[in-house]
Length: 153
Image (cartoon, rainbow, N blue to C red; front, side, top):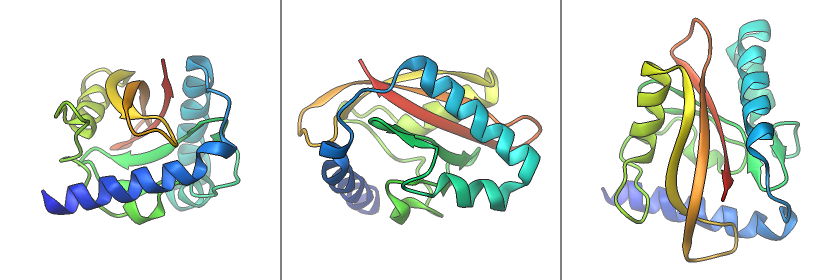
């Protein structure tokens, strides 16, 4: 549990540094399109190439105040352009301020529906108070992987 708290704090710190550069809010349509594009990249170019592209902090999968990340269905982070310290780590225990198991919900949506939105409370970059966030989860066809990207309401 302490490890999850430390990782969460590291993640929030990195987001607070990126906040001023990400002033505009991503739209839900952009999140869907970027997740599907990243999933297509996995299937067309392979996992290693997709991870390399998604991990680029100045790449096409980082825009406005959002970014795509890639996880497996066990909750392990495979690619994250904003918080590379999370890569390779099990995130199943990650909770929001209300105690909601966020990644567990991501995995559940990917496994059961293949795609969908997960609501939770998360601080906006540069803010301390949590705000309502929606993250779109999209399962990569034929793989035990999903892409995800979020936006604040």
